[in-house]
Image (cartoon, rainbow, N blue to C red):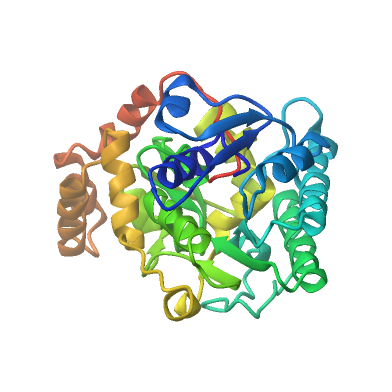
Length: 372
């Protein structure tokens, strides 16, 4: 199991180590997991190793590994090294790992944690992408390009070694109370910018369902490529409202500058492809996930988002009851500007943005891994 110091890798190791049918679990990462995560791994063995290092070949050969789960892809360039280091970690690392698997006589299965980012995000996208579809516009983001390259290498492994079962899981953006991912970071800001005239349709995946899908693919799962996502979608505007945040629609040319003013340094941490998701969203056809992989997510997209909101204990900037009351009064006051203004003032609307500014607190940068 690669990427063992991160959420998906570490907690999947925990699940697999609790399965008595699995003889041995080896967790691999270039950095050590936290003490708490290491404790949760139980009987699993941790090996500190970079998958680009020949040591990974010795681990697979000496242990007689029969199943390799690769979940070590990073979504954002590290602070030291930039894009070049990111590509080296992602693409070169995967290439060398799969080369070791190809030479190993014991490896029978390889599971790749991929991402729906391979489909890109654009206004030309279909309502739902099937696994056979490709991006309508070639993705420009580094993470998407790396994910496409990595998928190509693992499919090449399957062609050269048809006796090795290859499973590729293209996961929707993850969300949950324990995961510090893209969606959760965006929703922690009291004031959230959006593009005027656009309302992204988001299909998410609960963190526990992501673990369960990986476990299913690892233990007896069939080979093939699978979209992994929850039932249903949620519009960006709905998500902002359910989280008690304030949506600030702005023209596209001003999005980043206004976003920096509203969200501070946090805005600079989002990559272009992550922001594109909040502009357009992405929908996945998950029929193959159910009919072939035999996996049904426990949480719908809305339930997964609400679980994140509860777990994050977000303090509402504007309560939903207040918004409902404002809408009712404004509808009744249509055509009379003064009446509408009085309706808003009577409900304390003039204080909403002041409260948002108070709630912002110190600026914090997102903690990025490969999971969100």
